[in-house]
Image (cartoon, rainbow, N blue to C red; front, top):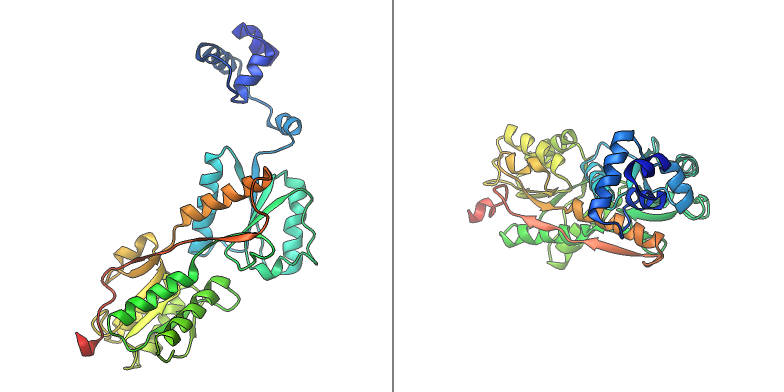
Length: 330
């Protein structure tokens, strides 16, 4: 820093203000300092700055899996939002969803120098009685019903599911079948609960709940079963990948979409509009989820936000060509 100050003809304090992005330096002086830094190959020592400030400008993200659309797109949105705020992201994957693995992830945080943590995982593993959170680390949770214990950001799973059922009933279908996600997934359970409740409220009898594992293959297997049922004219699928497999199975069995069976998904992945037919689905605003996660965790770090409670991000029904009135009304 002293070398940069001598070359630029300024004080070391001015170099410090420029390197830390503080105001109070003229543009001409700032450019002199930046030119001197470039000539000398000077880079601010982030470790020293972290020790001086008491923060590392890094957010840890703990998650189980990067194989699902929701986790990948949420992580991408968190990383983009964090970068916009001048923070880096450290990913801590948890291989197996067990208490020991989760405890290990939080223990590793003490060694990785993070200021806060965003957790994308099943909330029943975040039992404060059995997991010791690192001291002074603020936590925000994604996709859970733990608003009574944590600050939670989530998509409005129930609202989106109700919109899907209302759309299909409004087209004239007598009932709506549901291909849900795996047991143990809070998102899958909320979507299934809302589907069931919406049918009951409309005076319809809910068919048996079917389950997949979020993959297109599981959608295909279930689709083969549903294709054999003439009484199945509408299916609400808990994600777009399973809907893709379902569409293939219906096509192979000669059930036309949407003339014979209407199909609606959830997520609105980029490829959904290129399905055959283009898929009606619920759009999730992953960018907003990521933005709110970062915003909330930074507010907690600055002691500006609520410690607990849930923020829901609305979904949006995107109507394409995979839904239509049932055959009797076509």
